[in-house]
Length: 524
Image 1: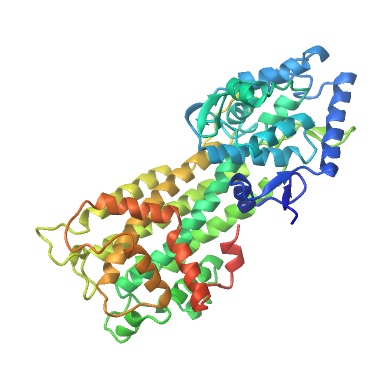
Image 2: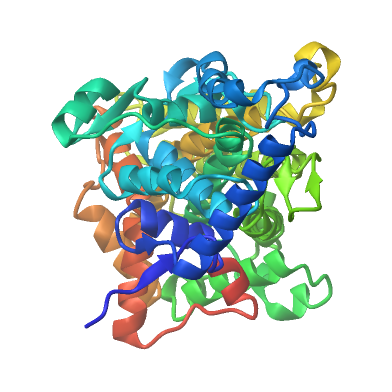
């Protein structure tokens, strides 16, 4: 059976494909047709150097030194020096998965044939991807315009024998990697150093992870929210399609349909169908509107991300022999603003989740004891878990100030407006990490409330989710070290166990959670 490959520079890349490549589930290569384009672009650069006409970054200095002419003999030194001089990142190194994504995204952009890169350079980057020799990249130092200069410079130091890499589970100097694998440093040709560090791949790699993590949080928030509705005996009416047809936002319709499907066949819902309560608090009743708004933000980011994943963000861009353009495709503003929007959307998922946790503790729902425990006084019950979710929700609010609202001129004024998109990406992932923890606490809280509805049963899907939780975290009838429960809950959210549980049960029970906007909101 032939192996399926993703063809860099040729096929359309998505966030999901990029992640599968990073995890070794899709093999990669560059076709001969695309290699011809790469070689042609490299030949154009060679002619520019030979003819001597000034072209930015090929035979001139960088940034404010763009008017400084570089001799033919010094053009290769210039490209090596740019990697050294721009390697000024600081802070904790980014996760190796994100660094590997940066390599993948950069090869895809360079392989399109507009950057003047050499095949040997591309092949060396491919080697790093295929052998999981992942360069160390500091997390701070990019302003997200003129490309993610510092992170990309660190990413490609190993090409010239410098920097460090994570290889076979160890962090080692590149020199040690070369000794082990029989490699030698590359000599970069004209334009190559600039092509390597110009681009949005740091922002882009973070955006790929944001799309993945935000999708996971949104999917789980719907399930956990539905379980909380069961536990507190909320109403199913706010999820009726007749309501959302009157205000047809895609995200609202999608969420309402999913939650309603999760509640189908519930004895708990039937038990209070004629009760005196007129309406639920917003954290239950407005799940479609709040989760739905965050879904719309996710969709917006995904749409922009897919454009950027398949774009050329180098500078200058080599169109052909007659046309070389020094433009601004490296500017991170398109993703920076969308990431800030996604950051806010993620924070709100955590914010409303914290409100549902608080609601569950009040003891105002029939049959549910205050603090979710019958014997309180000597026991504090679930009281302090909500302190943690409140702290996390508050921290997220402080992180929601948009990085893209700021700009500090750099490069002696040559680069006088920058996106700060690298900060947008890092903050969004930080917020999502906190949201995962909040959702873990709501998962535990909802499961505890759910227990008090026994012997009544929910629908088949939420019953299965509750069984999955109880295999890992028992019912609490007295105080214990709840931090241990929270750790298990966090692991469940991070590994998407309840999503897998729902998917497996849907197949067995021949139930579908597909909605009118299923493909838009469930695939990336």
